Amino acid sequence: MSDNIAHALGRISQKLGSRVAVTEAHSGKSCTFSELDMFADRYGAYLKAEGVKSGDRVMLMVRPSIDFIALAFALFRLGAPVILIDPGMGYKNMLRCIAGVKPDHLIGVPEVVGLSLFYAAKFRSLKKRFCCGSFMGIGKFDIRNKRNLPQPPLQTFAPDETSLAAIIFTTGSTGPPKGVRFEHSIFSAQLEKIRTFYGIGQGDVDQPGFPLFALFSTALGVHAVIPDMDPTKPSQVDPQRFVQSILHYQVTYSFGSPAIWQVVSSYCRQNKIRCASLKKVLMAGAPVSGELVERVFDIIAKEGEIHTPYGATECLPIVSIEGRTIVGETWAETKKGKGTCVGSPLPGISLKIIESTDTSLSTIDECSVLDPGSCGEIIVKGDVVTRAYDGNHAQNLVSKVEDGDDFWHRIGDVGYLDTQDRLWFCGRKAHRVFSRNGIMYTICCEALINNLPDVFRSALVGIDSDQEYQKAIIIIELHKQSKRQVEDIVTEVKEICAAHPMLQTIEHVLVHDSFPVDIRHNAKIFREKLSVWAQQQVQKQS
Image (tube, rainbow, N blue to C red; front, side, top):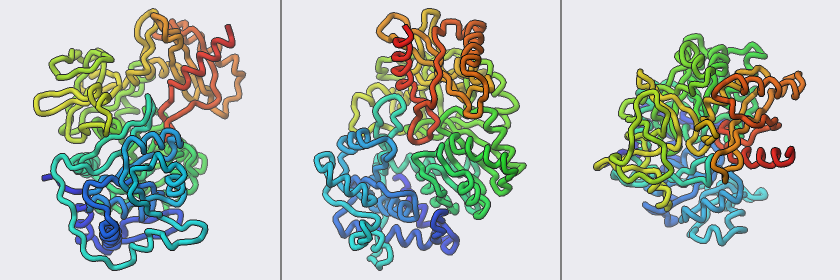
């Protein structure tokens, strides 16, 4: 028998009932743990009366809020799997995901409910729609009215090891977004790692840049402050508002994309602000630079910690490193092109580096395991590793490797283990460039260019992929405050490429105004899109 995360909320509400559980920074509204537990119960009882039952798939498209958290817990209590899709992925991808996952019910803001009616064919699996919010001032059908109405007690669903809790979609950074199946046991394991490894618990105040983490916080007895920001656009966060709520609510820890902390740390430095209550910052979603870590250390509690968990939608967290180790030890090696050290495996997690292949691997015996120091494909096994993609047998064949009664997951990243069993991330497997002088790894090569003060970030891509070898291209995005002539910077990049053995096969250096990035973290570079753009630019020049 597995634990239901909704049980955790019930236990916490009995213990910490009168304490504040959730606060909405933009509205100032808050609720206690007892109230959140009651809202979840009432929503669940109402949905059950409306025909939502255990096993029914419910697409939840509600803005981060008290109601989002209460509705999610209500669905967990019913045993109705929650489908979470990033609206920022665009209509085309979103409609494709919806058609593939076949939800039974929809709980959404008025715009989404309207969309489901307009694109009725894509939503043909829906039995019922529930509106969360008023439409044109009319609130008659607003499900939020139900949370204040007494309902009969709701018995919480008791899951087993295979009971589905949620389907969460990947960002689609290397292909179409995939629906990842989360059993209740996965959430339980993630909750335990956040509590024990990162030391998060009762008495803490969280300000999560990623809405799902508010669920973990409340289940741990943590006051969750929902920031006044658009979670689909973390790089566009208003730093004044983000910092204001940290200071006002005395936030003690925060999880978010590096893109958030780029903006927030710069703002705090410019305005000489220190968030003295902030004792832990977790950054994930893309490699985190040593410079960013140093800037964040400068604006949080002097004894504060910074952690950069590594993983994927399919498995998080699996590896972690503390900021002082990055700044004092590993970042110097990263700048030399050695990759980004993402740390050591968390308790209960096993890692292997195998020889990279694009073919499926049925069992672990088919894998060629590499020695420390050798770069290859990263595979992982452990209690936070999800078992399957939803309705995607072909991807399951490619991504899962049987090992007796257990299995390994192929993350799709490349890297190596050092002699201390620490993982060094070298990039996505799909982003490798096969040049005439061998394989080039994005993170390693780009670090050599990113050292330049005028370069905000760079991207290695390959073009002419139909040839035996690809043409290696470096694309740079400049800092907005750069005052130098673009031609001079390009010349400097070319000189670095000519001087470094790792970069000597670079054939072109291009400048891009603003890199396309993923929707969830605004930090992962869409190199596939840049490759197409680079091909067009090179053709224009020839």
